Length: 68
Image 1 (cartoon, rainbow, N blue to C red):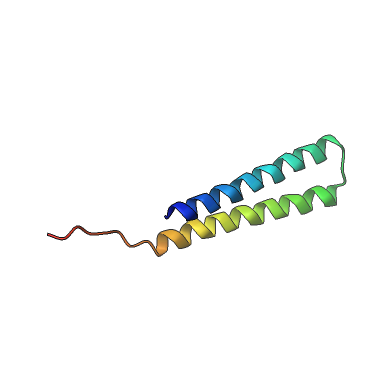
Image 2: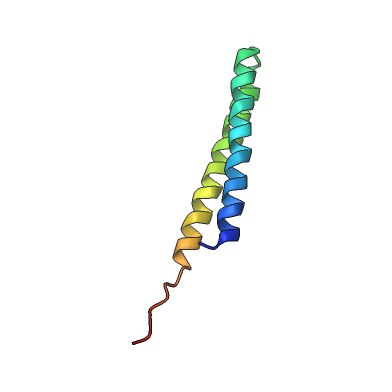
């Protein structure tokens, strides 16, 4: 994976961490089940996107073979 791809994935993961923190706060505040589940679904979708991006990057990765 390129440095830019890793940087992008790290940004996405930080956003997901923020979403999860928000979900914890929502639970502490006693927010409605529908709201909490909506945020959980969004977080799970974001994680799936990260996983797909990692798989796509690895699938297109071509290792450099040294010339002999």
